[in-house]
Image (cartoon, rainbow, N blue to C red; front, side, top):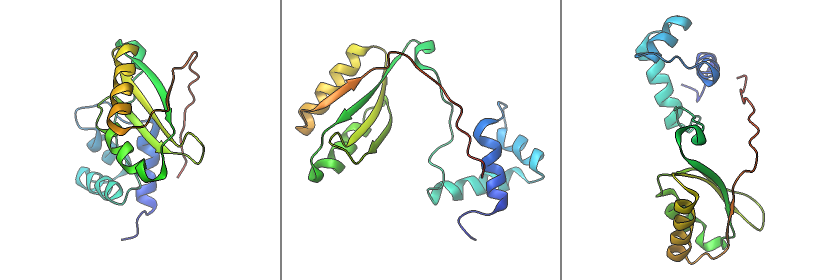
Length: 151
């Protein structure tokens, strides 16, 4: 089977912005699309295996749940990128971690109960990795957009 067919695209379009909040969301999706619940689950599992989708989960506004969030950037030598990324990824508050083609080449987002906790974790990451240039860029104002990719 190809990595993605028209039925997969239909499922992905459906779940991006209109994921059902029910006890059996995949059954709701299946019913809406004329499929079986099992087929929807199998297709999504295959898309995840093929790295077409990364995860399915809720997005929360950290501040409304009593948390703070920040964007961090680090200047990491080429030979230490994989080690640095694996150490950063061990922290449960890290939600994204990616490489960019710039002087500060590793960027990640961090959520925690306080900025002090984030700063302590950044110091621990620095000590463990030997990377000294990690900057903390907390938002001063948040602008949200709806990202929906029509497949």
